[in-house]
Length: 367
Ligand code: PMP
Image (tube, rainbow, N blue to C red; front, side, top):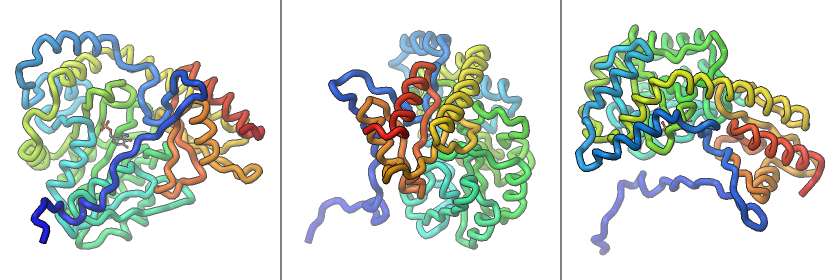
């Protein structure tokens, strides 16, 4: 009988994360438009702060991330004591599930939401319950409410959502919260909040203040351009902030990330430039794709979801391969029922022109 190590049975079923691959014939650079990274990169102030912080790498970071939390609180008008930082918002999203869910419990999410939600659920032996509404590609409030059972512990809602880019109107978010039992935690994931231009948008801090079962999460990975440093945060009711602080590793946010976050928040001009760039090229990309005969889901994020009509038997997967062969990496998400679509990040002006040209060629029948 084997006496080797045995993982929990639900761990053995997890698939490893697989990044996409692209290769330009004859070599050359790959344009990465697959991970919703910032077209303009980080603030130069954040880069300088990383360099300065690198002088002090032999000390552990501040376990309470005090300066960073104070800077976030000031920028967003929040209570610093209720902010908990993480190594990416991935970490705080996962910690929340570890606080509330155990094997056999259920975590409800939109099928058209962030792909990590079911991974987080499965990673702790809970059941991920996806709710689909193929007609709208946003979270289906009635469907989610109908999927809630006495085993449901959390509902994850990314708004606007990845990978479709669509936004759920705020009154729908409030309706969702009102319909949930008080013991179910509603996690409002605002990863793309900085990219939203719809004036009716709210990321949810006011709802966190008004309820004891709502948490908002945010990230520095998208428009702030700090994905490589891994920095995100949660704004939570006091009790949940306390549990997050008990469970998280004390030094989860490294010294350079803390310094970069503070500097990034101080550079309002850079964020404004990033937003302007994103809005302009999101509109441009949407129009260019539509002109090529490709449908686009209206986006409030820094990417667009493009629906490929079947032309001469060729599919979105063929478009993915065509782009990859030409050195452009985008995202295909068949596991979420989106096999007719590609998700394309808003990149630089040059990248957007190159991509639009390639897709126009693809639609004209080039192979
Ligand atoms: N939520 C959503 C909706 C996302 O798209 C992402 C990144 N793809 C994250 C959370 C996690 O971001 P990070 O861990 O880099 O903060």
